[in-house]
Structure formats: structure tokens, C-alpha cells
Image (cartoon, rainbow, N blue to C red):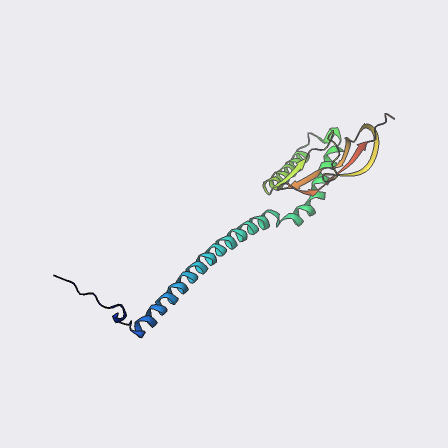
Length: 171
């Protein structure tokens, strides 16, 4: 059996409608690919925006009470000054103990909000944590007296401590 070969010029010509449809299919496939990539990028952008928004909300919640806490710090200072100057004969009085309990409760609640007093006495002076009001005899560059405690809120300095720093001389 012999197979007859068609002469090369006799191949059937493709239908123009089929060619047009194949072109449309290729075009639509490209569009679907582009739109799929665009949708994936939009989804990633949305997720990033949600994460940023959540982070911003957490930061806002942390520091929303900052102004109120700053307004309450002088009250805490006044409690502390009052107890420093309390006459010995009144220390055991029930009323004074009640006021001391109120002060401790206030400090505890402020601590629960993220407020933290930081220690300054004997520490090297730090311009971010200390406001130097005066200098005096003592180890140079070290805090030798604290006039007002310093506080931080979630690691951010809310109020620097007001301090006296040693000048290095012994007089």
C-alpha cells in the first residue's frame, strides 16, 4: 500500500474565523493572567494595610492616655512630698494609713496602664532621662539628688527626672 503525499502547496488554509477566535483566546488568556496578578497584589496590599492599621491601633491604645497620665504625675509627686514631710506622731494614725493606701492604689493603677517610674539616683546623667536643674559636690556626671522622679510609658520617656548632678568637686 502506498500513501500518496500531498503536494506542499495543497495544505488546507485555516478558517479566518478560527484564527480570529484563537487570537481572542490568547488575548483573553493574557488578560486573565494580568488580572490574576493584579488581584494577588491587591490582596497582599490589603493584608499589609490591615497589619499596619492593627499596629497603629495598638500604638494608639498604648499612648492614648499619655496626656491624662502627665496631668496626674504632679498629684503623685504631691502625695510623695506629703508623706516625706509627715510628722512622726501621725505616721500610725488610721486616717494617714488610709490616705497612704489611696496613694498606693493610684500608683498601682497607673502602673497597670503602663506607667513606670525609673530609678535615677546614683546613675550616670542621661539627657533623655534627666533634666539637670543644678550641680553640686559629688561624683562627676552622676545623679546625686532627685527632685522629681522620672516616668516612662511603655518604654517612652513621659517625663524626665529633675535632678542634681555631681560636679566632681568635694565641696
